[in-house]
Figure 1 (cartoon, helix red, strand yellow):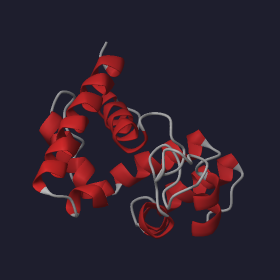
Figure 2: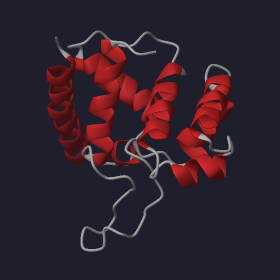
Figure 3: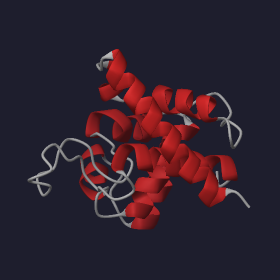
Length: 155
């Protein structure tokens, strides 16, 4: 599960979702202490990514093992409530969400393949409900974060 391809994907998604720093969804920059629906550096929602990783045939056993190793209960509520407190748990769940995709991880440098994987697995509402201009902005933002990730992971 730990490959350069996986590391690039995880870093790019963390940038896209949380700018590498927000451990919960920020709706109002003037009140950053107010938590939105998503938690952790990879911005998981309770009924979305958390539920998916805990229930998917490819990830469920791994998710339970990670929860046990981190001393968290493997339930939707407990994992969701812990993601902003435990970056290791958040990273593991992010990697497991990628693991549920039946396709191979894109090669390092395949920015479009990585973008498509991100869209398939994270299903960002800002993209699916956004205007063409908003979608273009999100895609441009992805390009920047992906390039940063490649720079960090590349030998």
